[in-house]
Length: 281
Image 1 (cartoon, rainbow, N blue to C red):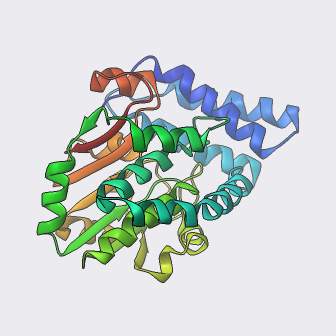
Image 2 (tube, rainbow, N blue to C red):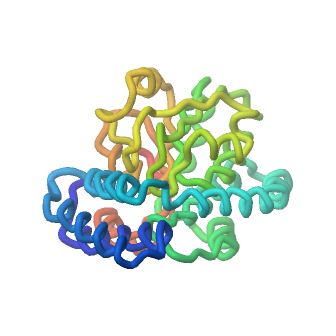
């Protein structure tokens, strides 16, 4: 996926979200946003939007001297953990636990404070459980899961990672070995190893870092250890829009679970904004 002109104002809006979370110093906010405009000006339109977004957020963290999303990440890990018992019960009562756990994992993708300033988790859960997915490759997904002994699971955001835990637990109950992947260092509100620990995922499966602070999964920026695991993976479950942006052109059996959160991605897919997808690569 390439960057479009409509991505440019979104880059700026994402910068403002991060700065308002990171400092109340308006003078510092103004200084940093002027710097991010330089990165926006240098956007390489041949690459996915995630490249420019990575450079912007890396600079914001550097100039702030801290991770502006740290507090909100822990907050939503705790919110999601409070919801976990009820969500687990929904899966246990379901006639199709795999489908239900998958839809809940997609619902969790709404927890994205790189894009949104407020979210309605309960409404999104209801929509995921009761409405049709805009792209639904669940039959192929089920066949692929049954055929695989091991699954590489690319997580996306903090908070959302608790919803991923529900799907990972269901896959484990079907005898699958799961290798979950988090970011190598902070970027936006993406999950790192500490979020995997807070969510409880480290207690149920192996978790590795991808060695990168890139938005999505920009393979050339990841560690050799991660790339080795990615290359040999029988099946990859990829969470989030950023991973779709950066991996959709890779020749690999993958399933993308996410919500189309912006007009550019929605238009690329021929769908309406907010669409939920379980899409085979």
